[in-house]
Length: 425
Ligand code: URA
Image (cartoon, rainbow, N blue to C red; front, side, top):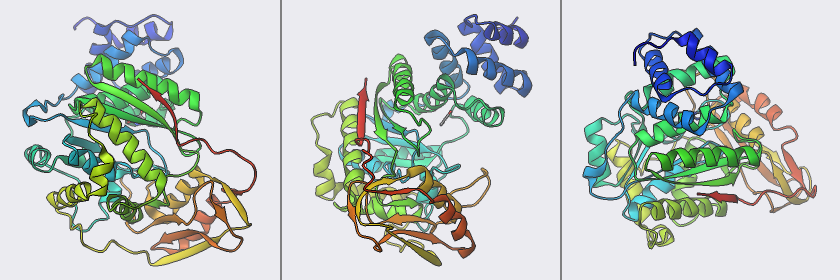
């Protein structure tokens, strides 16, 4: 792939020409290898932001990102594999009950996850509130756990689409995150490289989501499904509501506790519904559409896998979870039907209480978060406790309360979105 010049590639994209697969492979490889500097890649990303990418360009861009690292081969496991990705939301703890549930139904789940940034929580941050649990799993231990337990949720290694780590960091500081082709290729390069046979995408829409508007969420979902199918991964996306948060908790330890309730056969109805909907899609994609995951939730098999999955990574599934030093209750301001519990506001409140981080290197508080006693559509009575803010640092409470101003709507006649808006294949 010699003979390319970054300036020619930038100019071609800037002027609306279609880049060749060769040009794309070269520029991603040269950028990852340090031969193309950040300023040239920034210009190219901005040109892509404005010009978009054709389906062929996008497929080549995604493939080049996969090829910057290693595409894992899980065929030696001898059983089907399925993975799930959520574009992120508030109170979205679904991965925690979902991975052991699908594993309990005979499909292995290799779930490489990330940490939270901003108002959406990170799966690894949540699991790290379990005493002893380790996010880093060595390659050999990863395969052994997949074989013996059937599910692993851990940090992605450095060999998984390394170009994405560099590109994502650059997009973050150059105003080029909000581009559907760049988001789709970023997510799908990592998911395809993970090596699962089937993939289910949970594309969120609403105030607490990346894609505020349902049409953008559908376009992103369609783009990602196309990339997955082209790479030989059976891919389905559900577009789901994030105008209100999921379940009754947003934070770290509180979300683990709620996930354990779901695994014990209880938990909030929306978390159970979405966990089962995604589990059914994962099982169908992996060729086990005849298995009903509700049985494995009811009879305790999913809980057994959860306990083994946590213990395999050093965690104690029986250890008490950390409790906050400070709690602050917010009461319902009126009597009526709760029509709005704004997920973005709740996410920001949980973040300000210490559950999330503003910079990659910041620590998080295991016990920080927000819990609520009623979901959208339920009746509430003036003065009843509605929200509880939890933190180790009382000084954080006023700023969290500021974030919640205007977040609660009672009996205003607003219609909430249905939980699952669309299915795209
Ligand atoms: N998540 C990713 O992994 N990449 C993006 O570009 C956006 C969200």
